[in-house]
Length: 191
Length: 191
View 1 (spheres, rainbow over the protein chains, first blue to last red):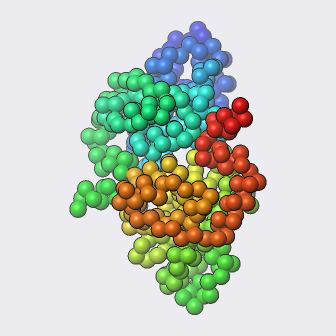
View 2: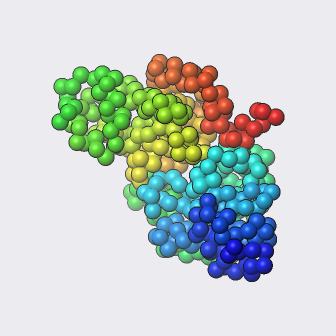
View 3: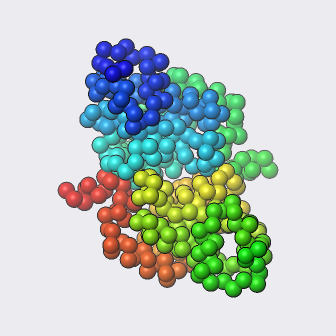
């Protein structure tokens, strides 16, 4: 195994985890490796996925879903608005799709950015009970709504993720607007 | 051209339209053909997509998006919970993905079933202004919410679609529950 409980946790190691397909993670990492990862580490993996999307000219938002008991990653992904020409595949949706038809009430989702209205509704509808948000500076709003629905929401800010999103928003304000409000919002802003 | 303004509108013709990839529709049908189609015809195309999903052992929910001016179909699809092992790809999402990054405020979406919380939020966020719902008998709830958000919602019941969904719900109540509430809801119902 490449990664064991002895492996030092560096951004390089976490990046390998981020970019390895979920189904192949058991080939490169022992159970004990995942048990050693902290919540901060999982949030960093989500940020590294956001970074990957940024390098693909996409919206830099990522998410990771772990099993609460084993702390193994069961799903992960990043926004693909640009990459897939998909009006709605946010970080959360991408990770949920990657996980497939599982019981999300036994998992925790780490998302790099405060969830939009659609993702908030989606996480509630799919039965999530634990949501960790990495950035409430660049976007914010649905944390209270999720809590009212009985979901535990923790804020675990990742400075790299916040910095990356701020940079992207400044570079591509139109893309940011489209991701949150559709092409209709972009056209309204021009008229 | 296979379909012109002279073509008689039958379920067979509409099924061909339903099952032809959206990008290829201009090869088989003239503009005048689409202009001749009524709202009922577009809803029937959505129902035929739901029927297709049913024959694939999936959830029988379909949707069609048309351009308001040309009345050409710009996106269509059906639920793929089973087919793609996807926790959230409802009829509306499938059609929206198929359409890609367009201005949905200039379109109308025909959905065979009353939209769930996630799809209602999604249609609002992507800027839809016109939603037509084919079945408020087997599911209902978000029509008023959408209207409060300034969206015109019309009910245009299709008896074939209503009958099909009622049959499916009776045959596969667990799948219906999962589609609306996730695996967590199914597990709760068993305990």
